[in-house]
Image (cartoon, rainbow, N blue to C red; front, side, top):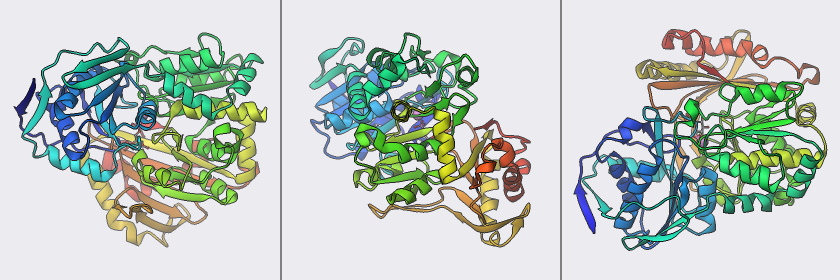
Length: 542
Ligand code: VG1
Ligand code: CO
């Protein structure tokens, strides 16, 4: 039986950089999930009888939300719902399922790298039929609808057994519980040279992959250990847990420090990698070298033809604005297209669909390609393994040769988390107010060449996205960028991105924070970070 339930709107259901993210108790309020899901459905047209893909990163509240969504999808007229076994489905695997099975769209339950548990974060995001995050015009529509919603539809059907593979019915809708790993593993095998990687592993090359108790555990077990033959134990923390073992499933030098330390120790593995809550981020570490995500994008672009899925070359490269310019120089040398987009994967979708770019990347540990429409953690790890196997060189040799050829972009991001929202907004407002007066002035002996509030003009659909981050560019190519996070759930997070280009090979072995010290000080001079936030240092440096 289908029921129409009266409801009152919540005012805070505005999707951020990637979907709606809030604390679990917020989602547990009466009708909160229902309102948002109905708002998603009401923002769409023509889904009657079509397929919806559903899954999540396994965090607390995943299973409850899945049951609600199944009942609502049935009531709203979807013909079929495909859900990952156990409610598990990584973000890139969801993207693949939508594309491969020509679904109408998908819903991913995740708050990515944010902590999970009864008092931590949960999230809901909608992906369109191209497999990518809903574009701004849809997320804006969802928010508008959510502010006015007065009813939702739900079917009175019992819970679906999420652990049992196979097909059942929820009302008139077919529900298929599928293996979340199989199609994804096949896709990876079609893109990379598994024989070469497996031969390298047989030859003694040692890998450690940290799934951080999040969604990539089952994927890494299957791909690295079963298909590539790496020894048992290569994937660590591979059981998805509702609270991620009490950690942040955030693959960076702070939260994946144990893995980093292992790779750096003389007896440790040759290569280490980690992924985040929903499997779209990656951190890669070679012996003796941490590879920044910005460099990773550039190096993958420069070596792309070594992987079988990219043998014919790449159409172009796109990076988010705060990501370092390392990839730009590779694109220039290859003579392919290059695009700079706002933060967030949804802005890459049009470029990928139009065939303008093959590779995309963000400084926040996100890299991906046209194989899906999301960033993809394990894909990046396999790409690196493929490049290392094909070149027969260590990750460190590959990176250092790359710098020698193209120059090095020293790069770091400083995050000030949980700043009072008013204070963060005041900092940004003041900064905007003085942008016009900055060019031509000198800060710490460096001359400001230009300063603006980044606006993106989508070359495919002509849409414009404004206020995407404040850039201050110095003569010589250094820059600092300021923006507020769109994924946090308490207070505001100020992100300060600092970059300096160093062409001179003799100066490629400096400590990153030292190499950037002048720019870091200049960022504070320009934006008054300390005085506005009341903090004397960032919460996280990556
Ligand atoms: C952050 C990153 C951004 C990334 C987004 C979603 O957004 O900076 O690059 O696309 O997270 O990543 P923000 O607005 O907090 O800076 V994920 O792994 O949550 O899909
Ligand atoms: Co993520």
